[in-house]
Length: 209
Image (cartoon, rainbow, N blue to C red; front, side, top):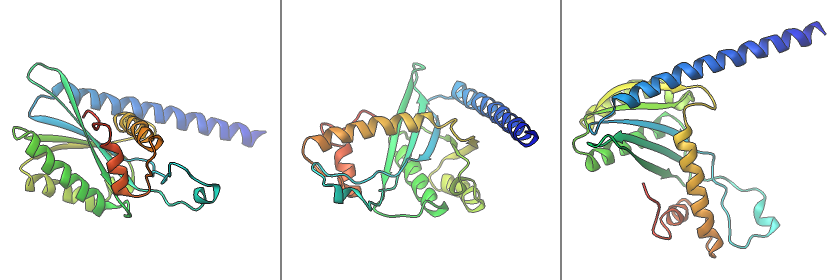
C-alpha cells in the first residue's frame, strides 16, 4: 500500500511538472508569434509516424512484415503586411534513412534554401522541435547556425517542447496529408514507395500550402 501511494504521488508530481513546462514553452511560442512579420519565420519541425505502405487491394499476407516510409514535416509560419498569418508546409519523404542529426541538418538546409527563394525578404528564423536526440544533439546545435549563415539567414533562437506539446502544427498537417493520400489510394493507386507517396500528396491538384 505504501509503495502504491508513493508511486502515485511521484506520478502526480511528474504530471504537474510536465504541465508547468508545457505552459512555459507555449508562452515562449506565443511571444515569438506576436513578434513575427514578413521578414521573420517560425519553423516547427517533427518526424511524423512512419507511413505504412498500402495497396489499393491488399491481401492479408501483404499486410504483415511491412517497413514504414520515414517522412519529416516542417511547418513555416509568418505574418504578411496585413498582419494575416501565412503557413507553408515542407514534406520530406525518404525511401530509407536514419532519423539522426545528419538527416535533420540536410532537411533544415533544404527548408532554409527553399524559404529564401520563396521569401527573399526573410532575414531571421525561429526553430522549434521536440526534444528528440536528432534535434538537440551537440552536432545539430553546433551546425544549425552555420546552415543558417550559408543561406543568408539569422537563426534567432531554438526552442524544444515537451512530449505531446508544441508540435500541433505538424500533427494537424500530417493528418490532413494522410487523408489526402487516402483519397488517392481509394481511387485505385498503390502507395508503397516514397516517390508514390509524393505523387499521392500532389494528386487531385495537390494541397494548399
